[in-house]
Amino acid sequence: MKNTQAERDAYGRMKPGAITAQGFLGTDTRSLADIVEADLEAWRREGVEPDAAADFLERLRDLGQKGLGEPTGIDGRWVVTVGDARGLLPCPFHDGAFHKNSVEAVDERTGGRVVYSDLSIHLLRAHRFCQGTGSPFRLDPAKVAGMLK
Image (cartoon, rainbow, N blue to C red; front, side, top):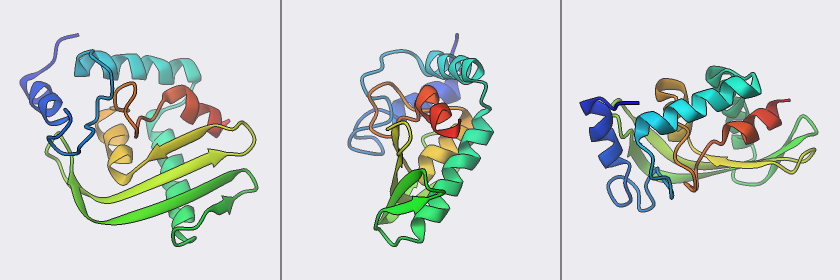
């Protein structure tokens, strides 16, 4: 799949050191368009809409914030820890800046674990970008979908 100029520019900002030390691509060498298309196909296989996944992750984040940095049990299934940092992170697509935080959600039923941020949710919802394979904040569609089921 071919990338637009805006996508090529965003891809450049996703590399390590541009916005974050580790970047958004992990060890993935595919083009941005190919990463997004593969993840959209994975969401389809799992039967989960990316917006539903973003809603779920926002809910876990919101409930986890009540723990003020301590692990918080949610619905007898998930344990969520939300950490906050000062400052904002810009979206690599240049459409906003997002609170620096990290959310760790563990599914006690399946052992699944995801780590994400407010920017991760935005990238999923607005750009369908789950981050590259190996990225520390990657929202792997199979993992997130498994936590939803």
